[in-house]
Structure formats: C-alpha cells, structure tokens
Image 1: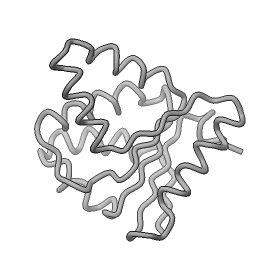
Image 2: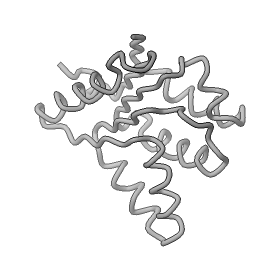
Image 3: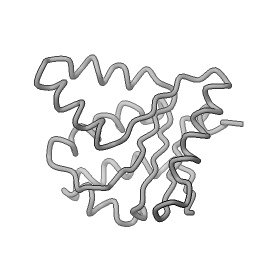
Length: 141
C-alpha cells in the first residue's frame, strides 16, 4: 500500500548477497511510482561519486535539490566501502533533508549494527542513524 511513503518512513533491507535486497527495494519503489509518487534509484557508490563531481563543477546544490524533490529515494548497496569524510557529510545532508519530508529505502549486505563502522566518525554516524533508523521498517533477508 506504500503507507511508509505517506508517513515519511524508511525501509532498511539487509541480507547477504543474492537474497533479493535490490529486487525488493526496487519493487517497493516501482509500486510507489504506480501510486503516483516520485522515486529515484541510486547505487550508493555511484551517487557519492556523482556528488563529488558536482561539488567540483558547482552543481552540488542543484543535485541535492533534485534528490530532495523525490518522495522516495532508493540507496542500493549501501556500505560496500567505508565512507570518507566528504561522503559522510553528503550522506548526513541527504538524510537531514529527507527527515520527516520523504522516504528512503536502503539495501545493504551489512547488518544495521555494522553501519556505524561504515559511516566512520561516531558523532556523524549517530546523527545519520538516529534520523534513518528512528522511523523505519527493517527487513532482514
């Protein structure tokens, strides 16, 4: 029913390789599209690379605004590599912009407890995970 979108809640999907995390995340996004919501899919590593380039060419704020306008964003394959300081701040900005204003679907091979290590700096990790996990549905495959 995509009630999670209407309530600005998140969906966190974790599990090992090949169990269908990306499929499930994409299926939820597809259903949201059918119901008229604006949805964007991002491979997390590619999104961070794109946003680094956007900072270099001056289009960073425009790119963040595009993400913010979506009702749902899908961050696929989160945590495949640890975040550097720039990516930590970028992720915090995205999560903060969406907090109570939109939904995020995150897929990851790393259990949620391990996300602190992926994010790195404890203070920023606390801020990100507090906003991300507080209003979320967790699916462990």
